[in-house]
Image (tube, rainbow, N blue to C red; front, side, top):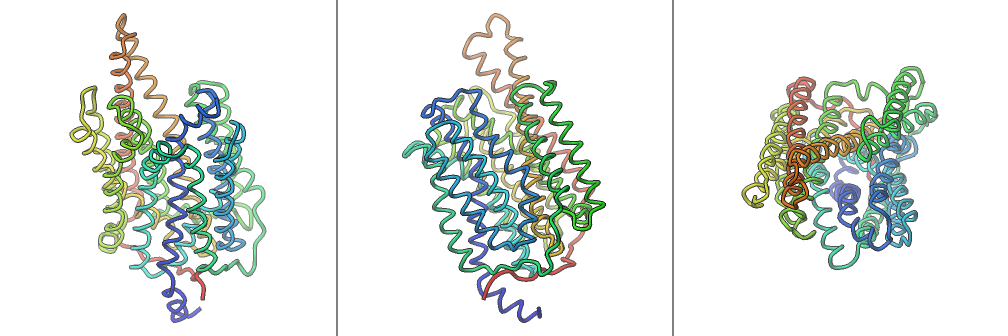
Length: 491
């Protein structure tokens, strides 16, 4: 395809396509936190136990995390337009089933189904962005906007979940996806052109089985650790199985003719560094949304809506740096210093949050940390997503995009287990050390805050280590794509 034809097709509707892809990304990202806000109301309505509650989150994580690579490769093989639309439609149907759930089992099944279709949708959206925007300056702007949505969607979910739960019902936290998906399906059907590979290679069945089973085992193992302990036999068994299966997957990828995830995709220094940045920042960020939500509601007495509003400054900070980093800074400095600076700001923001206490105020002790964290996240997400897909072969764009989402998902699962365990252990020790006074509400509340700050310290340490590792791994300078993808938009 000639350069002129690139321009004629590409420049006609590319920004409308970005709006559609951004809407789909927002739906997937905010779904995690919007459902968390709705959980207490859903539990009261459907009557399931505290021990069962975590399965509402885990069912989605297991399906989503284990099927991402397969979902990305399906888009590469059969065309991303229809995989994207199928993901949207399936996600909407699953959301409708979940919203109408009359039992715990029905809700868990709907969440798992959301994860299946989310695994098709998320990599298709990022790969469509990668192959739609091939002009370097426009690519930077598009990834800045997309990265801002990816980084701020969780905070938006907290606010939206609070509003819907308080004024309508927890069910609307799922029904709202019907509106998002309906608009996105119409836009995708109108704007996108399906471009499957002319010569479709055979799907790597052994690689698909080992990758999906290995990722499932890892996500389940980390989730089980947060419920029980790291020394639990089931936890150890699943984590070991996950490592063994993923090692087998790597060996298979070295030998098959048409690998599920060609190792050339992940062995590039910039892509590898970007994947690492996404994974480690996902581990660390978990502390903000989980423990700070608990602190705001249980210790400062915030309502769900006020809690959601409390995270908005972080959202605005992410949007600011995500857009400016891609349009103003990457063309001059490249991704390496931005990602390194973002991870460093993440560490500083977490350290600021360790100052919270029983009598702290939001403005003095919470807001500064959130703003600094947001500035850092914007410098990480947009440049890392862009670098992770820069120069990849068009035929590999889907699976390269899926790898980005996989790193986020696995990182979130590790963060859930690791930080929850550390916080719980610190809380228990604080209560034990209190001796006879341990039964008082003040001591219990102070012990909980000690658990939160312990998690924040560990998150800061992870951010700091990530800053060193990723800066060492990423190449310095500005890099242009070595491969220009074909446009995927229509007419």
